[in-house]
Length: 157
Image (cartoon, rainbow, N blue to C red; front, side, top):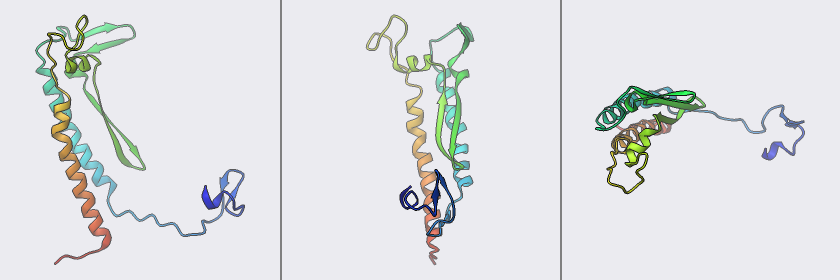
């Protein structure tokens, strides 16, 4: 709470009241919606590539799903979904979800076979992210660099 916690004029009974002693500026120099759009355009590209890689897995379940107590397990390529999380309107997290056997496929383990056995790993997840994350990082960096130049109101002729 800093200066507000010891000053009864601004802080009473656990609540902030009155005006702050210094005017607060909340100027935003970049458009959050534009940055979110960059992320939203990137996600389907990555998800499509993940699904394509999961379809290439030579082994796997013959049926479309396996019944487990309380849930239905789908084929790996059908289970891949994505979610985003926002804070203050800005996407700060991207999550790709898939069936747990996708991890075993990636690591090359299965029931009765531990890590380091004759079954080879089929890395379908990490290579896709390693390929596409630099593209996302560059696009966001370019967007924010343009915003920083605009914030300084510099003109380059």
